[in-house]
Image (cartoon, rainbow, N blue to C red):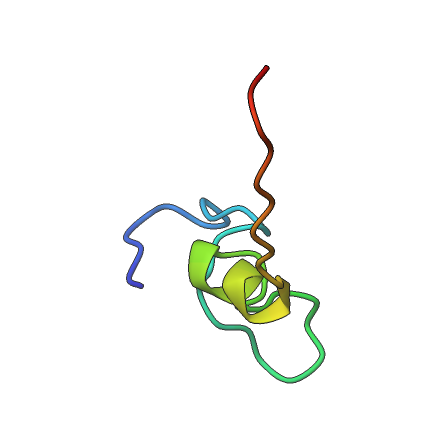
Amino acid sequence: MVYVNGVGLDAADLPFGGIKRSGFGRELGGLGIEEFASHKLIRTVAS
């Protein structure tokens, strides 16, 4: 990401990297959430 005359325009929940323990990470992006999610199929009979 490159900014010109725009400092701090990114939000902490964007899935762009981070440096070491900066608190910014890739976990909050859509693909990062998939890494922590488990899928479950639930079927019900409509009555």
